[in-house]
Length: 224
Image (cartoon, rainbow, N blue to C red; front, top):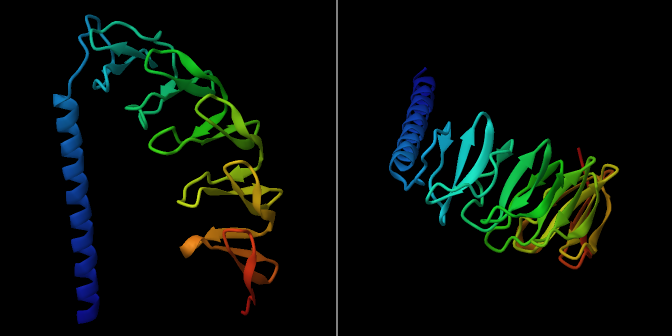
């Protein structure tokens, strides 16, 4: 009973700590939005965002657009949604009529709004992002060029320091580099990245440890 009480107390303390932390974060965010610099808008909007490098988003009648610090419209108020992630850089993801693309800080559509989904943004050293159209995935660069064709059924993108990505076709997984070259053939039931740049793959009743060059360095039977 005492052990149960100790465990219960630990759970309660954890829950209280989590709630308190969430409340602190929320309070900080509310303070930020209340005090951050805003554009000089002379008309009524439903939402006015903070200025980021001289521009801010605005919302009216469920549509989004952008203004400069003086309140001048940079884009029409026409977008159905936008992504705040990466808003401080030069690529802002927007959506119109179910299609996604990127505009720059002048409001110019630098990557056409033709994708069903866009995953990620061009921020820090991320120079390729995942796009989806007609249920196929590929990668585009900052110019909008489809560097890696939209032919995969799924991908997690380039989310590791080795600059390789897991990709899937017909329920088989493999690994490609940023040029689209197959480092590990798409023949495995699953693939996970592990330490030291190695990958752990499964096929049938075997596991394979594969190095950065795509070479199998260890093979094991899966025992029940």
